[in-house]
Length: 172
Image: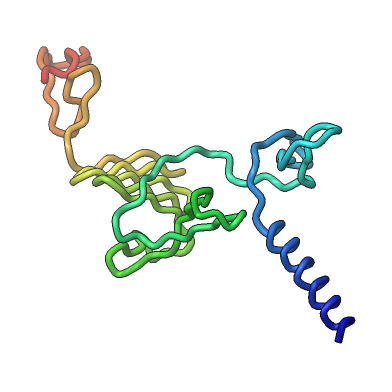
């Protein structure tokens, strides 16, 4: 019986260690283009306690505030809820995915939609769509201006003369 209790205590200690190591949080301490990153997970008498090398995660920066009712998860690494981190969760009935094409990356918020798929970038704002692809640039809807001058499909020129002369710049 005593041996069984000792075994259970050892199992419990191993579980506590495994759980404690399952999520570690710390600042990036070392960066290597081939190896990735090492995190500073603590401080010891011999210097910082570093993680093993981890591969490169996403390097972009975004700020997309959560919306009321959005599904999220919380991780409390030490068990203290005051030190938890919030992670985005899945979609819900009120907060549906902006995209059904699993080959596309889509950002949609505040009346703007940005879609990257099939070698093209499509930005839609209101009734205006900007489509940039290997075939060229297409702008649909709205007004196209440069330095305050209309250069869209309905712009007009003044100073038109018959023959080979150039017209004046756009008038409107």
